[in-house]
Image 1: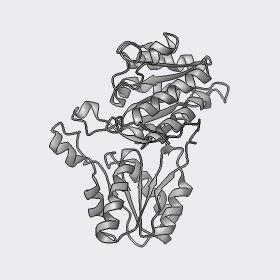
Image 2: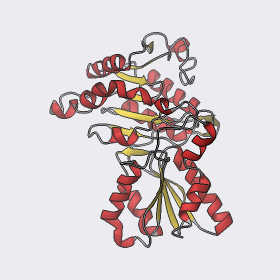
Image 3: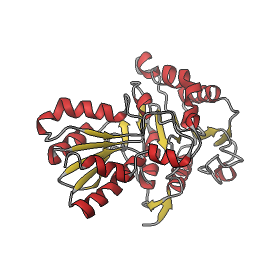
Image 4: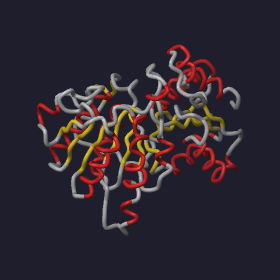
Length: 324
């Protein structure tokens, strides 16, 4: 199985879906002639032309609104945010219009739009370019939110998202764009709402989403090698729909949980998962649920300090040792 980068995997997903469905197009700032700010769409404009790769002005509210309107008319737009941090200027379009149309029309109107781009810190771009809004977006019924942690998932989830009839927000990670994983050559789809066990274990469950799943996997390696602790790592893949069944299954198996995420801790995805476990699997817990999150402060610009702010494997190990 060939290894390709996370960036290449997303590009392949976009190309395959454009070839499969003539209604698919990609729109965003610099996605066409400039190949995208992070080169995710490199070469697609030359291959598929102006009808499928469309440069947008620097007006997120404007072009997201255009995409929602196009989706209502039968197109399947894939809208790129240069950073998900810029979603806030398009909130009315995304969260007040796009999310509720199917419900408010009694199912007569779908909004099959994908909105994608990087949503992460750790790249020294400051507080206004480092938001992780997956918890905020998932708070809106009608929106689906996915956070792929590796190249294979990025491709499979992107293809599924493009074929879905609801708005799907894909939160990528610039730190992962250049990293390689094995990706199947044949066509495949990964369903939303289906978590993935990255590593089987019996002593504790490390549950995570996005790049934090990779951090959890690294921590699991250290726990096994240095402390003889066999950690299970569960990658949620999507925040909404959420694979509650997989979460409860791993809790009932190991009886201890640490949630790992790059969200800030207040009202985070981890807080939601903790609540679910408390309500539905409390009797299976042998220790309190603990969380490892990004330190609760605006994203720090200083790179050495930002590395401390975002969870790393050592911080996960230290947290695990409190309950194992």
